[in-house]
Length: 486
Image 1: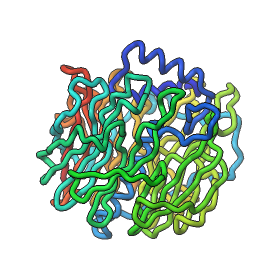
Image 2 (image 1 turned 45 degrees about the vertical axis):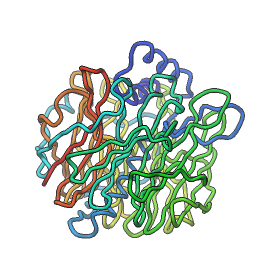
Image 3 (image 1 turned 45 degrees about the horizontal axis):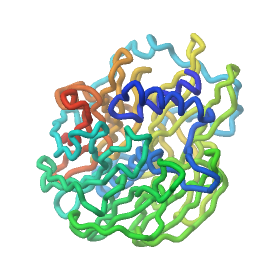
């Protein structure tokens, strides 16, 4: 797979539900017109701008959820970071001109994966649908436990079919007392022109981070990072203070990062900041160039930021991708960036006792010469040195999010049987990421385009997940909730 093909695949996968032919043509045109690189791209004029929220929404939600779940669970029931028998090559190792050889597609799919040992049976129910006539639907992005119940936040994605103009979006809230029966709160004026991405519990109130369409006059596609506050999940106020693009909870406060980019889309610096209340922020460090796509706080308070960078070119001219990381003991003093994995990509990172666990893939060259990727999991004690384990997914499968729940790690993503429509895929580890089993296909994942985007532990020892599923009758995604127990 060439770099262009990979970027096109990523762009198409970001369109949920599947695009119409006109939208498909625009995506292909946009990818061809973009420099062949990974990372954040800002579509702007001559000014220095903050990269659009829409480009990082998925990664932001993943990083934040991993932190939130870890804090909520506490020390009991935790897994510890697994110790790999053989470490990955150190980042300082020499980089060959071509990727290592990966197995062919037939070799990768030769054996069936072992079944999941816990959280093997799931139940599914639909949330109230706020946008039955909107092609992009109204879908949740994050969920938390609050005041004895649950709160999910999301966005009516009207911008998906209007050249990505965030002014057409609006935020919405769902609340539930038991995780099964939900009430929707849509049409709130405070969420007009907004996209909601992360929800946090801070003391006795809720904080929601997202973006509001910016006052740009030279074209759509820009949004301003914003925070909303509520004491009851029903009444909200929007704060006027400037907030970061990515936010993670750290103790009683927060840490954040904003990537500032130039008009050509190249990241020029990452500005880290801290806050005691999640509303008022103070800059902590202005770091060298690098595209930050995830921010995670360890259980000991250390902070890890990560993102991709272009590596050396292969013999066919395509670029490899390396993982770059920044680390901080307190969110204030930072070191980096440094390359922590060669020819790899971290999709999601979560905190465990003793370190971190990352989900992503390694790049490589198949025996027939094509460039492909293989799913992998890494564990690290300090965020600098990482040990890799294969998770067992095939070329037709993709895992993109990792969550920490009581007694297990859960990785979610999609499978593309026969290259057809995507559907949900869930893998579970009860060994700190060393061994994995797959949740069997079942009625809870019937249909196509089931997508699990946020998972938390519940008060009765189970888990609650939110996301969406594709409804063929109305041709749009339905907001969805899943429940499972060990």
